[in-house]
Amino acid sequence: MAPATGESHWYVGNGVSKPLFEGLLALFAREAGAGPQRTIILLLDGAGWHTEPGLRVPDGLRLVYLPPYTPELQPAEHLWRLVDEPIVNRHFERLPEVQNRIEQRCRHLEAQPDTLRANTLFHWWPQQTMPS
Image (cartoon, rainbow, N blue to C red; front, side, top):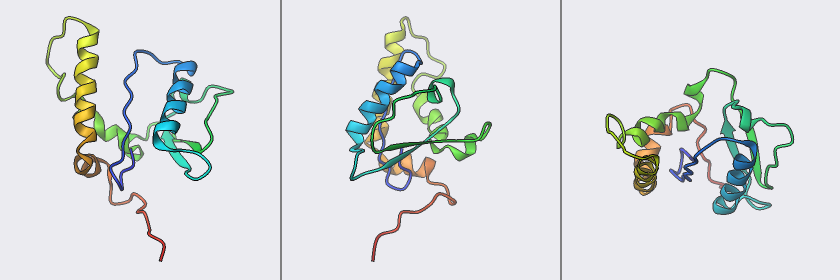
């Protein structure tokens, strides 16, 4: 999530592990165009799979870790209420139904950069400056 632009990439997984996270980092780097011409800084919490020793990080990605207990510093934390909206207080027979509903919601939100920006672009967030 890039608060200034609303650019976002969503991934729904069915577990957490170092190999899964490495795969997601590689996929994200490809989809977001990270590399020699574009460096992307990912702000992450200290979850174990984010901080595994020897984690392979693709070229063009830089991982920056938040201090513990600081969700107010992570813009993506404010998106959970938007993502959860279609599943709250609903019964699903099977897990794939939940995953489907969340994937649909993420696609819907991705098409609304103004909604994403409004929920993540805090007054203190560094603003992108255009070269003169």
